[in-house]
Length: 454
Image (tube, rainbow, N blue to C red; front, side, top):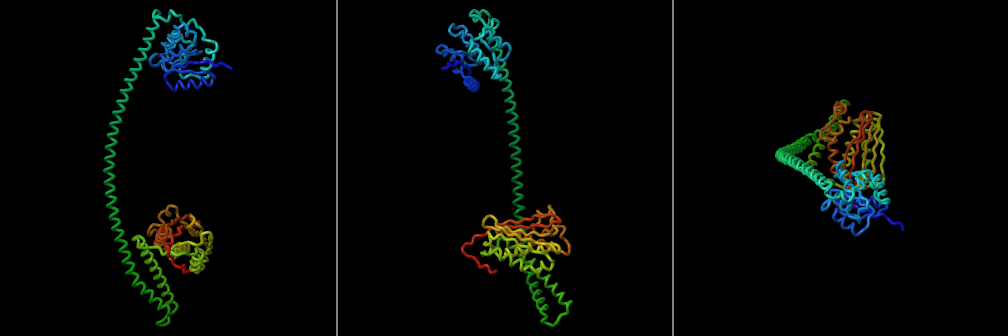
């Protein structure tokens, strides 16, 4: 069996010691370690070693003292000795280390492969004698001034260390002072910002209260005015129906045309008033969903059939694509019709004659539906999409006598979609048409549902 060379590592720094042990063991050596010179010397008298690798600056007994004692002991003096240090790195340190009896003086960090070559050389062939650097027993005493030189070096390094520590303490105190000053400034700034934030929050609360009061007054006014307007408007529509029925005598063609325009305008105005009332109800939290189980396919066919004559008049082709996987849902049928009619009316209004409208209905999140209405109309500018569903908003390019409108329809549509727990949006490019989409979450029945009634 091959006998491994035994190496003694002396170092008080655990990380350095473990790293060195790792390299030596990887090189096939048996490794023993100690944390200072005194512990090492005691062990050297009980075990045999082929090489000693020692740090210099250590407690109890440093490396210089250990090396001198090893060289002065007849039983130990033949063991090769390497100083391996990161603290004592001057030329004077190297001189004193070699004069103390070391075979090599190596500074940390070093090339570990070269270091391992030195270890291999010294541990296998014995230490290499160098008349210029090795000393005899007589030179180990006080006669040659070695101890004096050693003490001078040690004192010099301790003075340097103390000076560095004093500078570090002064610097740390300076930094602590600056940190304290900055902390006080920061605390003052935080307190100031906190006061400003509290003031801003108070102003915001006051503004919200005023806004809430103004919104309440607005809703009350709209509700009151809408009811007041509906009463005479219903009378006007009633009389136009009687006139169109010619119950009081025949009317000529021109008179009938005027009556039709009055009837059409009156119904449009009534629709706007109803939309305003619905928005007020939703804002006040007074509108509830009247749920029923229905077939999306049948419901969509009914809505398209109802508006078919309007699309035919403009020669617009309407196509429907329905995913049968989620055909039956629980929703408010009347409000769903309002949503679809508003979006289809928009598509009808802004799609030129001869265009097309595609309606797609597909499953969404297992129980809900997603509806898309794609037209070949004028399209919407990118900067106008954000405000499209805001109250009473209209894009600049639709403000003309031919298209008209107030912007109420899309606002109500958004509120009705959100009432169902859904979302609404638009994708559009000017000159290439628009795709309005919305999602509706199928509602829970709570045990009582109305019949479809389609």
